[in-house]
Image (cartoon, rainbow, N blue to C red; front, side):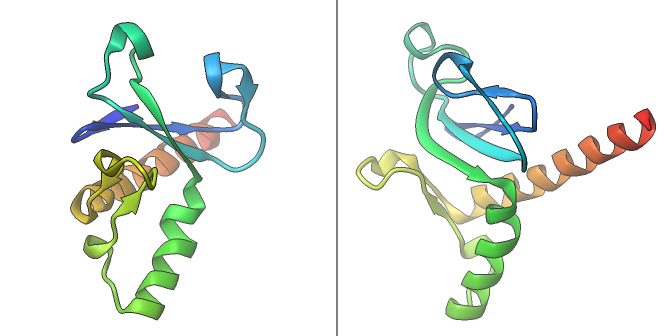
Length: 119
């Protein structure tokens, strides 16, 4: 997990626990979750308040990016993300999302390296 501005961002891989009280297990492709890091830790825990934002990493890195660039002539720095339509404080701006995407790529590379070394 890493903090980007007011959000804690967490990558979850196959076998990792997630969901309310970590009652679910990831199966398949890696996902990314967004938490409000400004929320009361006593109430919501170390991660913060879950924003409802959970996406496949691929969606944020590949599909979403290429479609936005193609359809709207947007660059990655322009592309923010609305995590919850009725909570404006949970909009991630474009520059922050660009940093999140770069970090996601680093996480995927690190995971692949660990798997290669273990094989």
